[in-house]
Image (tube, rainbow, N blue to C red):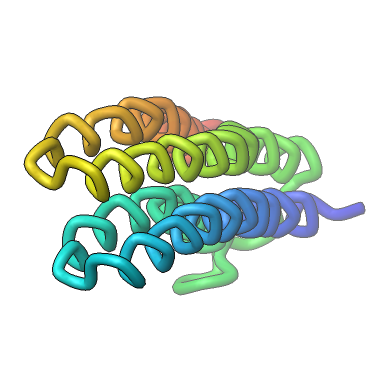
Length: 159
């Protein structure tokens, strides 16, 4: 097994796990949004914002994948041979956003559903309804930060 394979595997994990979480979260919120819009179409912009919140984890996973693929030379300038140890480090660097993106997007979707239900009954409470799923976002951002810091830290190692 080559180091390049392990790095690409990490990029794939970051992309598909965070993407799966986002699609589940957005799907749950989308079902709730559609129900609200059937009764009150004027709430479209408010429920759309809440529905799209879980999509960010998929974007974060994609960003980490791009950074990883760039770091190992799949995108951009070739960097030469990637050792198995370095490939394993890239794989490990992708795991925080992969797992956190998966779980936080699903749970953010559930919180978004609750916010959509709140807005359907009390549209003036949009700010409060937005804060609840936004708190879940914090942990996806922390995982994104760790993955980015780890990828950048690997570049300076001479393994």
